[in-house]
Image (cartoon, rainbow, N blue to C red; front, side):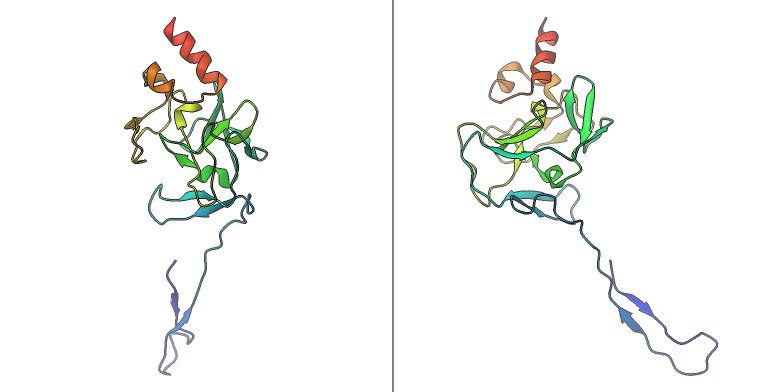
Length: 183
């Protein structure tokens, strides 16, 4: 927010006036996971992200999901079952999509784990593969993750090829929906 110019003299006064500047600050919410992640805020739409403050071996639990509330499908929600979604209500919401993710969001165990096969290093971007939890996304987008295996347009697991999804850990509700869709 820009500073606000304030004229301290009432308009009816014949005394010359001068502008006084008062500064205002926008307060950021308290971090929800201050020991494990840092939010990198951006003024650009969808530009904020999260980075790891810790190093962990592959497969380790990064965080438990403890502050979630039931929600309708929205661009900020995470799908937890066939027809259920949650809002994370934490800094985990800043974990962006990547086709080469660093994390898995296990919505059945309500935990976030480091992907298998690769350790997480301090300073790594915290990302997950959105179709691993999302069958049909509320807001599809053109991926710009830059990964060699980038899938391009991301709109949920429902519209992806089985061989593309086979590269990833998937939540049980996505695996179940894929089996039903194939039958």
